[in-house]
Image 1 (cartoon, rainbow, N blue to C red):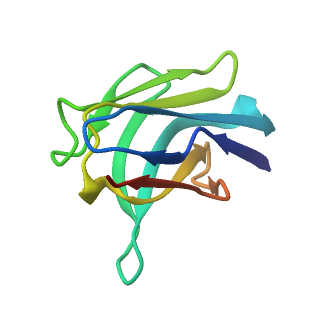
Image 2: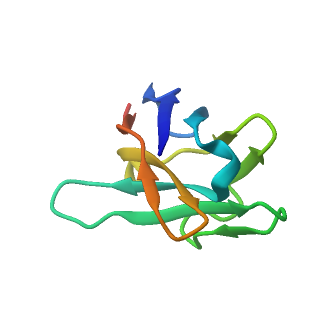
Length: 116
């Protein structure tokens, strides 16, 4: 099993930046994929960005060019740099890791609010 701890959420004005961080502990040697999702009330959880153990990344079209993901599998960390934040980016952001065998683990979520 893997435990995840997220940090870095908060309130920011439109056009501002935030950096989310996630640290994994436990059976981290079994992780092969890490990423960030977000969810707003009344909607399903949507992918923001992912990074595989080989360095391949997937970034949602809605945030491409504004958000970037970085991961360090040796340290079991995954960060999401969010620039030029807009009100539509307001959501709870969740860290997600996938272990060999397909088991998924979720963080507790961190609130990001973009408002003037």
